[in-house]
Image 1 (spheres, rainbow, N blue to C red):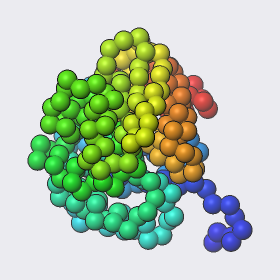
Image 2: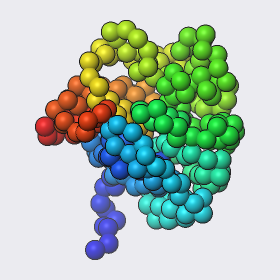
Image 3: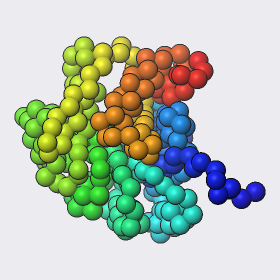
Length: 270
């Protein structure tokens, strides 16, 4: 049955990322986050990982041609309101994604995934400069954690998060969300850094080891908010609050023997 002309369209988002066989991060976390925030999700898979809550045992990249074909298939048929980009792995994959999004005019949230929670590398060393050159200028928002920011800036670990955010702005993104999950202290501080302002988003740090997929989930929830036409600070604020609840409820799931996932649907079932 074809869609009626007077049917109200649902907000939509596309995730371009790797697959996590354990279901806690990557494409799986992104689609769960979209759904939890009331947004229809489409996907482009860039890599398949064999992983669980403890480790990544194998990674196979999808061919750049197939990645481009997925992007073209989705964008040629489905109205996409926002895009989240995660794991890209190689320069060739980054080029395929950048080329495929050349005509996209909606907001892009770029999560520069470099290392898995287990410590396994997910971005080749020679891909960092390509990521900076091809994709950072397309991003409405870049969402690095502290190690990712240092790698994008070739070190500079002596800078404050706010200073790192300002430095990253010079690489092309319209805004930076400096995530504080790797910092110390009883309160987690995330900083939205733009040319004109710095906004801090605070949340009490939760004592749990079940934080697998937090970065993927936060960036996807922000993209969902942007897909609904929220202002950037409102999209971050609502995503931040939702993720805090997902982390707080994570221990209820009891998934795996390592770093378990957050509870994406904590507002709906437990």
